[in-house]
Amino acid sequence: MAKTGTTTQGLRAAIERSGYYPALVAEAVEAAVGGEPVASFLVHQETTFDANEVRRHVTVLVLTATRFIVSHTDEQAADSSSPVPYATTSTESVRLERISSVVLSRVVANPESYKPGTLPREVVLTIGWGAVSRIDLEPAACGDPNCEADHGYTGSTTADDLSLRVSEAGDGPDTVRQALKFAQSLSEATVAAR
Image (tube, rainbow, N blue to C red; front, side, top):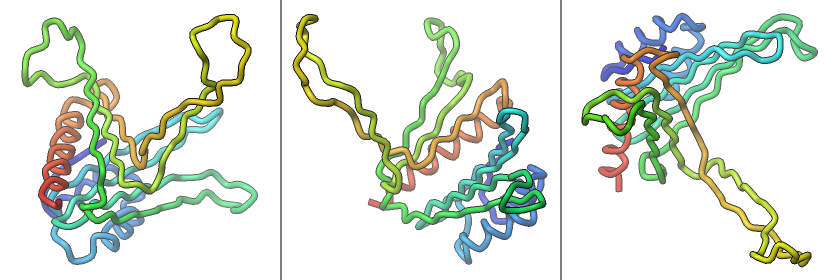
């Protein structure tokens, strides 16, 4: 479950409460943060189902005065590369001025009766800094249904470095609130960094 806070001790406590390999996750995050004070954070644990396996993973987002840090830890079952289960942890540190977009999508029920301040049913936080782009292509066509000419391709490029979905049903209302707070803190920090 996601937790937010504003202190290094709060970050460590949230990682421990997630219960997902806390010593491993905390060591990786603390090494990436270094000596910088933590301004805000979000810890999100998610369970996914892959064929006949249940997999857990945790994403930790940290905001400092100068950087956005993302850490992701996945567990893997024993396989041909390892006779025992193992976990992979990665961290990336991004200077705030490199963040090109912070997109917050909100899903609300009964939009016709929406009242300001009502908690969304779910939020999707997408953060782009140029490390990963996705290209979606499709054949181009003209308006003539009988045309057989090759019109090439059309498409779009999307910055998609990180996308994190938090829902009230799966994660609880507090988690949705915490994700909203982190998104706001990150948006404000990227404006200040320019």
